[in-house]
Image (cartoon, rainbow, N blue to C red; front, side, top):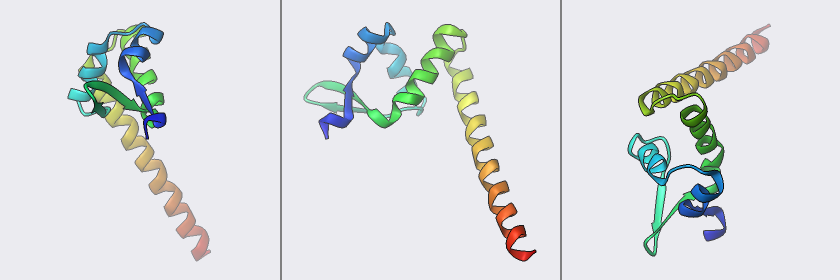
Length: 95
């Protein structure tokens, strides 16, 4: 299981981001942090999202509330696209 986890402190050094940023993301419910033996980890499956949030925050100066809003809007878009795909499939089956 630890092979699927990334140590946050090491990730922050490599990526040159503040550990507090990742803690704020967890506080907003955008990522989940695991604590094992007093060390904080993030699951590798969340890495893409973390990198995206870091770009928004550091490169575009979007605050945490803005990141949360963008995240929720993108989720809604994904859900709507999936619903459109299902409806198209239903229409195709009827024709």
